[in-house]
Length: 285
Image (tube, rainbow, N blue to C red):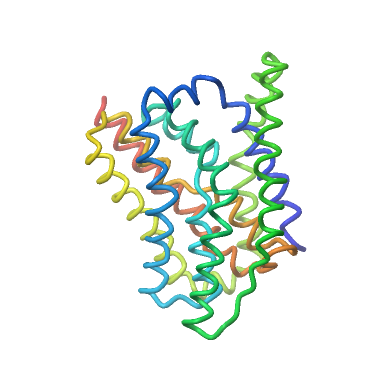
């Protein structure tokens, strides 16, 4: 079974939910707090892929896992980060702004970064990994931009219905992602078990380093605690569903193995971020 047909609906739902969350306040926040938005985007779009590439190179990951780890680092945001920001008493409007902007910007930055990465991996390992840039761009537009725009329009024209839909789909999104991770685990349990030391370690290091680096840059920006927590969560939480969709898509990489770093990341991301939120809330009480 090609899980892409399960991944795609989940990703569409997640991006539709994000579209519902977007409002005028999210974008006016750019004008009110441009420095925080800029620092957050730098963390998501620049620092995180560099960290992932460095970790994969240092741990000498096989080419398919190397590509998969950098891929998940290139897929920032997701509606879950907005919920985590709320739980951590961060700036939810900033969280929505960063998630929306990064989702749109990565339509163009992701193909550029991944084309560079696949070429670098091919040079280093001799294993050629093909990246159909045009198909990647088209798939991202269909799975990311279209449902994002549709959710925003739906909220604009049917605000009351959007609130009800948000409540229902919001409860389904996270369990659906965990079910997806479970299906992948069952399909590739032998490979995950045999390589969990490297896959789990690389994913955990990526999450922790992403949070640490984003905390450092937000301190450099001298932001409030709420803004700093938001940037840490936004940079630490990646759109694993998007990475899985790209890795397993028959139109792009067509590789379930390449999706395994994203699966490990999704599982560990929630554990580590929930722990972070727990200590934040405990400190506040």
